[in-house]
Length: 157
Ligand SMILES: [Zn+2]
Image (cartoon, rainbow, N blue to C red; front, top):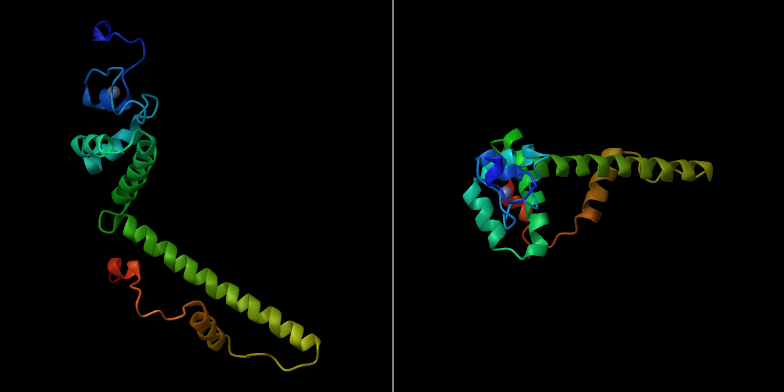
């Protein structure tokens, strides 16, 4: 096999997994090096070679690297979470943001109340739960004309 390959470079990761000859014009070679075949295995498992090639073929060359990175991430997450994939990852990150915003609001309230106490004034708001709902209202100004894209991905937990 090695004698048939004109180039001295080894087959790319994609061609190696597919047991195909790799040429200088291989569409997948720049994105799936032979040193990291795991990337192709993951993407191949989720998207399939035909879809990978079709997607890359339809993109400008300068955007293909980002597309491959995105496919690798999406495929990795889909394998870890076959039900929700990236939507599950986004949901978890949203929950984390919400929890961190709540913690930040509590810290800001404590800071404010400490300053008020130092000045001999009564606390601004003593019920932290009330403060969170006030801050949530301030942070989420209602805009009924806009649809939250994340609502499209809502699912029961
Ligand atoms: Zn190749």
